[in-house]
View 1 (cartoon, rainbow, N blue to C red):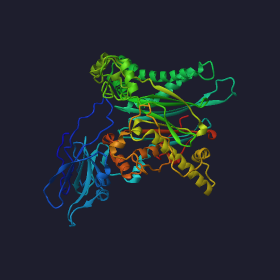
View 2: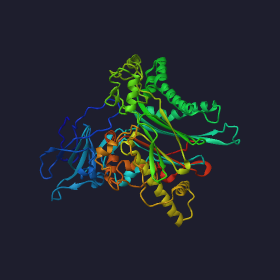
View 3: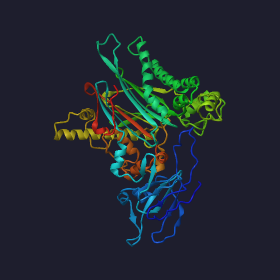
View 4: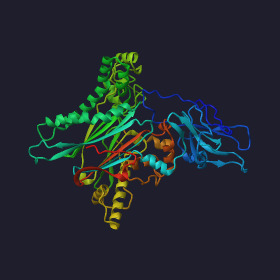
Length: 612
């Protein structure tokens, strides 16, 4: 790894140059998704002596892992400095309140009162961390186009505020088998490349044997994991549910019986996915060539050039059937209580990547004789998901890509490209019978969550949250008779199903290796966490999706949670991905016809609107 010297300078009356000449690592090409593992091997220690005017350089020493926080005891409880081959300067005439900001992470060296204050900092470089000492009391800051930025370790309250900034929660009182759903997002990219969508469609009865005026609900929830930009996932948020619902509507209308055959419903969902991707990838090109305008090309080609995975669930309240359509490596997991009383975790989707043997075999069958169709676990050695929306450079012919690149915008296709398309948006659809009376729940999440937690851990954490709510509901009802809020109705429903038990929630672990292509939670290894440690998890949040994200980032290890939330983009992407989590609770709750906001589990800054 290329290294460059990093020095600390004493402050003058008006100026301190803090960080410069950090090494620049080779950057991953934007034609592929960022590698999931980025281990940092070494650190350099630098300091300025408190009683010597000359600068001193210290020797390098190894760093076991980039996120072994407890091995950097001063750096991560004081402040975080961000350097990327850039200068960070201080000017006492422009920085107001500097003394008060610095006071929380300043320590004095030497016995004399006149010795300059120093603080130990963590410098985040392109491909390494460096620990060192900075002389001076002013905060690390930088003037940017949108104002002045200061990066320092978040307090516990600030970390919680950041975790809950995008959380939303709704009670579904429609008597159609769903009682509540929670969701949260946590950006790592800036802007976040994930997106999500939820919609409940009231469907009139088409069966002559049913009472006139009765209806059922189609309920949709989706998470979209974008890459190489945010435009494709945003397009899915706006359009995917509508495309699928349109195809489902035609299929149900043409059915000779009350419900269409399962194969017809699956085909309708796949058709909706494929038609939207065709609009993104191919119809956009036709419009660009017809308009012959770079302004039009800049707008229409963005969703095609970037990409996104999609995970969409469709619940029909009439049949109690849940269908999960997966394109890419986001994952759906069902939580259910077995007859033994333990929770079980069942994956309802398969991670579709080049590292999945099933997907690799499919691609080699579709492209016989092409040695590099899957290379290093990636499509043509570049893209990790084998199914995705957009990513047109893997779908366009070399001729189309060349014309777009020469006349408008575009990327050079892979040298291994011979018989496109290599990537498809067609999903794999699974069907599961839901038992609302048993209190089933569904977790949908982008792969950032599954890099940190296993299926069993996620289901166990949701179960822990459910039982804690049931217990608190029982306690509050004995001391107060005024509990008529929508959240209390939800808690009462769960109390009737499970009761209140003050013991850890048991989770059944799979006895055999799963065939769902599940990836190992690599971040746990990267951060140096013992997955078997006692008291690893915590319970602090009213929103169950936020509860999952907090525990994914470290749970009871508060210092780790705060440090991971402190790191700004783009550096945070080396340690965690964008996170989007939805949790849907099935049950037979009250039927008022309303979908209401749970204010105790929804951020004050959010402006949620039930999508009915």
